[in-house]
Length: 121
Image 1 (spheres, rainbow, N blue to C red):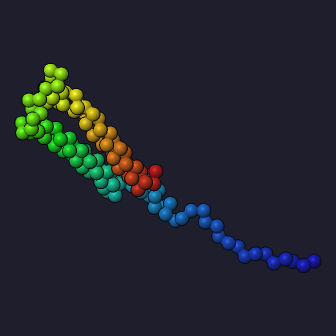
Image 2: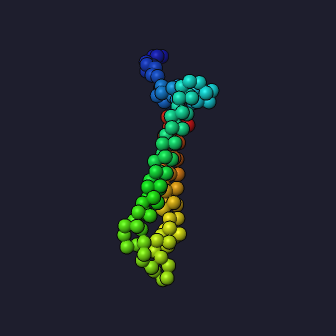
Image 3: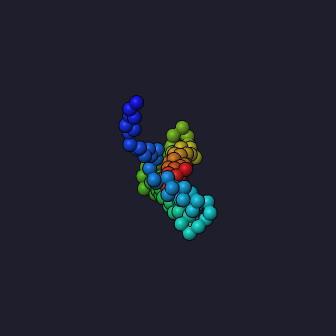
């Protein structure tokens, strides 16, 4: 009987070594260590900055309307017996606010998704 040659052993790796770091990042956030607190602080700053930017855009657009009414012909124009300025302030503002809210929610969710990817969730 002859003994067939066995192939040499090979190491099979199912995942990269980065997994240990991701688990450690989750632990840092969960235990509120200095690193975890800094990461959460970064998320809070990102969300706050986003809220300020979206708020400034909305205030800028709505704040420009009285100037537009004072300088342009829209201040005294009427449509179906209603001043156009009142129609814009009473009706057209709501789609703007809805769009701003929609943009804010999508960007805030993107910030949270990026944070989740950073922590490995």
